[in-house]
Amino acid sequence: MIPRVHDMGTRTIGLLYYLYGPGTHEEHIDPHLVAAWDSLAPDPGRDPEATYGDLQRLLDQPVIALPTSARPAEHVWHLSVRAAPEDPILTDEQWADIARRMVAATGIAPEGDDAACRWAAVRHADDHIHIIATVVREDGRQARIRQDGARSQAEARKIEVDYGLRRLNAGDCTAAKRPTSAEHHKAERKGKERTPREELREAVRRAAAGVASEQEFFDRLAAAGLLIRQRVAPSGDLLGYKVALPDDRNKDQEPIYYSGSTLAPDLSLPRVRERWATNASEPDRDAAADRSSGSARVSPSTARRQATWAVWQAVLVVDQGDDGQIAAQLAGAGEVLDALAKTSAAHTRHELRDAAFAFERATRSHVRAGREHARGLRQAARDLVHGGPALGRGEDGATTAMLIDMVFFLVTAAAHWHGMKQHAQQAAAARQAAEHLRAAYQAAAPMCLSVMHQRGRRLSHPLQRKQAAYLRQAVPELAEQVLTEQGWYALAATLTEVESAGHDPAALLAEAAERRELDTADSISDVLVWRLRRMADLPADASAMPEHTATAPTATRGAAQRPTNRKVRSAKSL
Image (cartoon, rainbow, N blue to C red):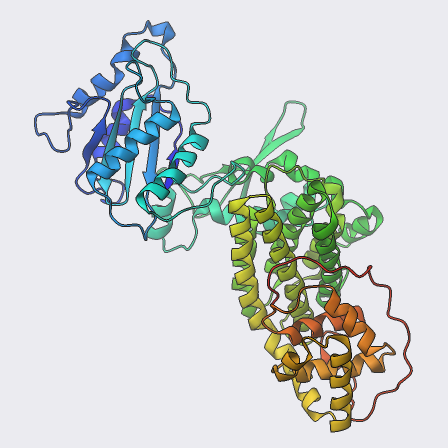
């Protein structure tokens, strides 16, 4: 059940006309009163003798009784309460009980308070009601309705239990503002998947991913096709900004602008400025990139490799760091996801976009993020953007699969951390993002792993047995399961390349397995393939390596510099 406190209003009659009217798209059916402060309150929906003016005058009576100078400028309070689509249709009596509970919880009409505010609950659809109230009490004082949104949410959680309705996650007031019903209807009318508010939030987040200067931020917004309006002080200092979609206009055909802060709390100009204040860790390198008009400093595959390493470092922080450091890493992970979605190939773009859209909620909580702790992730996001779009095949396609694998790991670790902190909405958002990442991986990985699979099948039998022996030595408890997986041949081919590169396959494999929980992985072999290729600095695309069909050299060298072994608590791997 979703309650929503709307902006305060000045005209009771105007809101009544809307509630009892046909709606903007004729969606209002049989508008009528289900409850009110007085059981004898007139109902213009069911009583032909009652008028909107009759109900308005009664609701406004305590306001009108005050001297003009003492009347509040905005006195109309409005709360809508909506059931989930899968919930049963509630009766008028049930909605009346819900309305009474809501006005009591929010401070409009506390239970047993004879001098409370006047209110009325109107139902004009099966799945929701609207409650209208005037905030001046019968005794002339104004109602104490501070934190009415949080109180209504808390009461909604209790109502869900009492009525057996779908139980939603408790919020903490850090979520972005939801689109209004009018915005949803407008999007549906135009055949759009998302409302303008949601499209703009996504576009601005992508523009802010890895950004290093104010000019670059606004250049990215313009390149995304957004209309931009800046708020400038008399001194010439920039105070804020608004953006609009070119095709989103009001009845006068004027663009509808949204400020960054109304799109999301972390998209206000001061909050975005915090990003480039901490992103400028390599000023000379960034300046060189700016002088070259944003030309790619690294290839897409190199950018993805570097991002994979940065994400792994973030995973270690989520496991070992303090709350401020972890919150910073999750905010940085959001930038990486935005950049990855922006530069992904067509076959993974939709799922990665949905993953970034979902994970946005998991990047904000009441834990204060120390942004300086996420420089590595923000630089990775910047490199992804400047590296340009991936083609989805060859080395950049394989490194994309590798990066998705690691981002999935970080996102599931984020879900675990949020769950431990009882951040219900954030944990749910991270889990939803993980499912989209799983789908993106399944779209990206097959074309990359097929070459390794074919090479593994062509290995000589002695060499296959040798790789199986390494596997049994490194992970004896999981070896037999891995040997039955379809991905075993890709792992065998990778172990052969690891050995040819001069590493000890068994030692490196043991380290890769030690770095995470593996017994819940959908494909243990897939996980180990990407870990080994990253740790041994092998090309993600196996076709770039010579094929081996005989016994590989036995001489080995120590593994390249890698972070200290650490088993990380996390949810399922890919």
